[in-house]
Image (cartoon, rainbow, N blue to C red):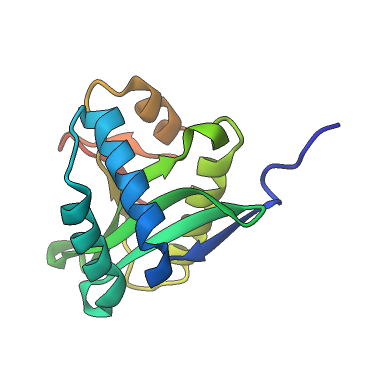
Length: 157
């Protein structure tokens, strides 16, 4: 029996009650990618601020399968006056280990790309990865992100 992993994953914006799971995933991401253990209280303070303050132009997107949060991505707008618009950064892209290899990241990135395509002020997308994270580099290249000389990966429409 095969499962259509793309259709059984819902993507939704995070709300304040998601603070504990976002904090947990952010700390896990820091440990996995940067070998750094952040203080969860500090992480929670920043996440709570981002969730509560729309003027910061930041959004957490959550991938949900069977009522369980499986992954997340933080997007935030970088103004680029010289290009005449905003370039959202995709930050803190993380899928819980038990949900990996189930196309959660694909679904999350596809949803975010679609959402951003509806905005006339978006002129590209950027993300940053650790330079020794070959798995992430390979993954994001599949989604049209390219190394652009700034040591970040970008996708320009």
